[in-house]
Image 1 (tube, rainbow over the protein chains, first blue to last red):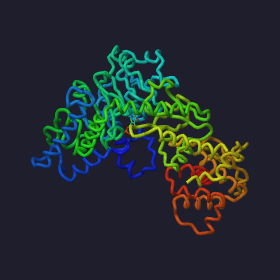
Image 2 (tube, each protein chain N blue to C red):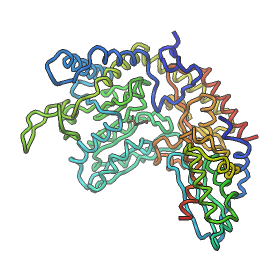
Image 3 (cartoon, chains in turn orange, cyan):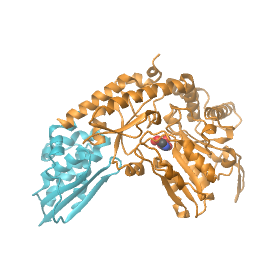
Image 4 (cartoon, rainbow over the protein chains, first blue to last red):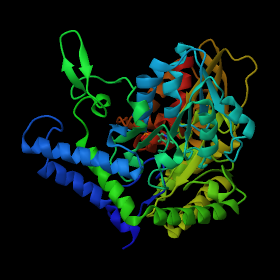
Length: 399
Length: 138
Ligand SMILES: Cc1ncc(COP(=O)(O)O)c(C=O)c1O
């Protein structure tokens, strides 16, 4: 069976070449079917009520938590909090923890490669008086050694992506986190572009906090994860309050439930958790090693092909073992949106724009770029078609 | 779909005859599409209700620049009322509202952008210049 055959959308649209996997992945049949099956067979409100349907949906939901725990090698299920997406997880960190704990003389150190969702929640708290610092990278995405000196004894938190969605660099997380450990800062890793593409092990990565979205790893949209080391997560204040997260409620005061419920207010997204659980099974069935091998091979193939073309300017790492399964580039003299629109007319889906990384783009002196990002179902043939279509763009603009 | 990248649009995109800085413009309106990075500024000189000169500067995609340029060709030397009327018709065309034959014809070369009403992702590029014009003439 071809990997492509697992994805109903690609069967229904054999003409589509989907190269926007970094934005959101396509969904395997097993994920889609399980969600339908859930509503046909098990649907009830989790954590509420004694009837069989409620009990079943609670089981499904909590089994999903265990599956995520094992997938990222967390110690305990209570360390897994379900959110809507990586963005909500990052906001939960900012409003549930940083806002209550940071002192005005402290600083937060962010990578300049951070996605907006890993910048704005901290920027929104600037009125508390702390300083926001950035680790600058060179054009291949590497931090200069001296940049790490910005992490000092007043650093409250350090945050970076495991893979930059803007330029594709796989960061050397260890060197940054070792420095954070040396000064006792909290280590936050945005694994949104990592999960499903590479091993993400919270122990090996030495992360205190880690976030990702289900929809970028074959799961449904609307489900995300916050992992937190238990002792740290247990000091988080609820960001949303209401049903399900309480112990006792009186007219004037309330006490809260223990983790994980305390940070999950309201009726939860059982269908999302179930879809995410099936997505994890899908990844494990194919195997991260196989996924990585396919993606690395395609990335190399596409990179070499594009690099040999003088009209194409590629950004980010030149050493391919530092590059995730994505390539950002520009066709000289052609605006990325014109490239993307013409590729779309050839049924090739790519992303064009600033990729929610305006500070990075500004730092690298780029207005906007095109981005192709690969998944296990892509093939060399897809890349050949991409390249032929890029040649069509050239015809339109250069001739 | 390559229809939107017609000869006309590409010619305007390349020729850049309206891409120039005016000496003493009395209206300067910057238009920005943060999502694409289109960033164009329209400059006008209006005397006695006539647009006597117009030009634009900045950077943007082929569609935003060509639309701006075609618009400038159309309104230069015309009255403010004429320009406002054309802007109104252009916006209605992009929104996909039905136009009378005369209205459509009155858009002349700007008809080339009609298919943007089926390309929501690019409609903002095509209307950027017209928004600048509308703001300038308020
Ligand atoms: C590196 C990175 N972090 C965070 C996000 C935010 O993900 P979401 O929009 O699913 O919250 C993205 C998605 O574009 C991303 O690529």
